[in-house]
Length: 223
Image 1 (tube, rainbow, N blue to C red):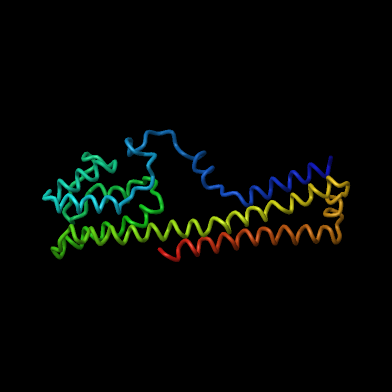
Image 2 (cartoon, one colour):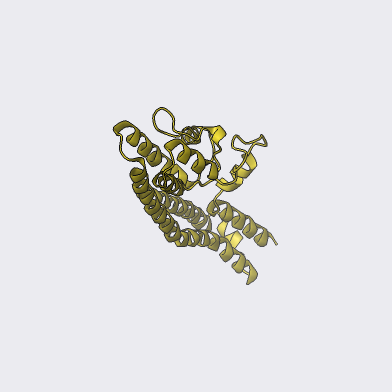
């Protein structure tokens, strides 16, 4: 019974090490105040490539710049009350507020927002055709989004393997206790068993941090 309880504690520790805690922390720390963007608060990843393409299409169809931005941003969840038309610098006020309002953005929107703002400022300062610039920008944003999705798929396997390897030591202790051995007594004997326990725990933590560092490096490689 003692071995089973100790093995369960080790399994819980392994699950804590290998499971991502960010989502649980965000849910528990989320305030219960009314959101600043009430209509589409849950849609966290705004596709700015689609927004730029729609604005360019409206401009080609003969719409004015302010009308194209206002209608497109309204369809994307940024109503005209947020300032859909271009500001003095050529950047729609809704996009400016999107980056400074504290709204939780997805990785795609966070990466695409600076490029979209830069394209708007460029066309305003040098007088370049807004439709053509937005089309090129949308093409680049689409390619970047596809590369980001490919990296996420490629990292899914190593991430799952790291979590599985983190649980295996506790599973080994459980199997040893099931066949009648006493692995907990060996690991806590103060000699070679304790040295193996400390070395294994240190290697597991180091491996988890190493995989996390490799994942961050691969994620930021294309940014």
